[in-house]
Picture (cartoon, rainbow, N blue to C red):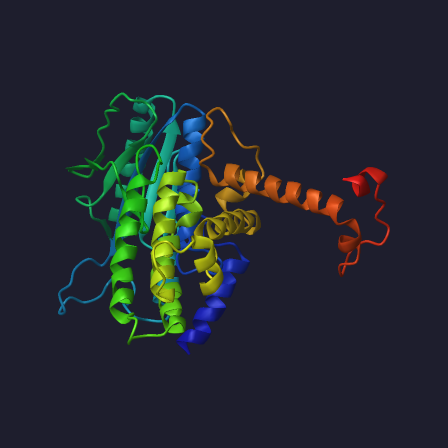
Length: 373
């Protein structure tokens, strides 16, 4: 019965657009990667506009007491089918009264607030107002925010120290240079160096298990090892790629080296074996190619998420004051242009082949220059 009620309730909430678009928890076609990519895009836009971005990460907790004898008077029952949906309704107005120019992203009870301004003092003032509104809301609805684990980060390209003082209740918030939100580690300049290092360490720890199962005379076969890699190791490498996939080539090479090691374990080949041959034998797609696919997929997904704050941003022109190429929109535009250029070259070199493809237009007129090329 609860499942039936939950399915009808979710349909009503989505059909009437009752849930706020900033909330991605327990919702169809929305994920944690949407939120981290959304935040990363805003931070990079701030860099392009010579602005500092001040961000605060926090977690809300309903019914924080753990005593078994305490009567449940607020919150939702843990483990219930309806609980996730009811919780989304419970916190749906948490950002309704935030000051202007304060942006937010939520995944269930994980929340991030940020604003971008030219002067850090303006950021400090607006964010303190937002924290006061948040504190007032939590007291009204019996929700607790762990102020000791709530931190702030200043994202800036300026070499100068940006001084900020924020308070949540009676607690002064601590600064965090490398905050982790929804499993993705950010850094002050969005180089993603810390995240790739941590991801590489986690992936290599799982790769060690593959080595234990592989041997020249005994152990798992190549098919089993490949499934183990694609199911346990590669997801660790690719998580959050829609955000950090714009990192520098040196960081991406570190991630690709993990897949190269896995390919050698699967095939039992020597270190001198060419990587392209290993990828052909194992059928593993290069990690950089998969990264480009994830970026294009995420960009297309944002364009189709009606009401999401990133929907309008994806249709706006990319900002190019800095030659960084580190935003989802910039990278997606560049990849789309490369795809169109490659398609145009192919159409000129193989016109008769393309015209014979299913669904091709029969009235395509090709110039003599196209044939000559």
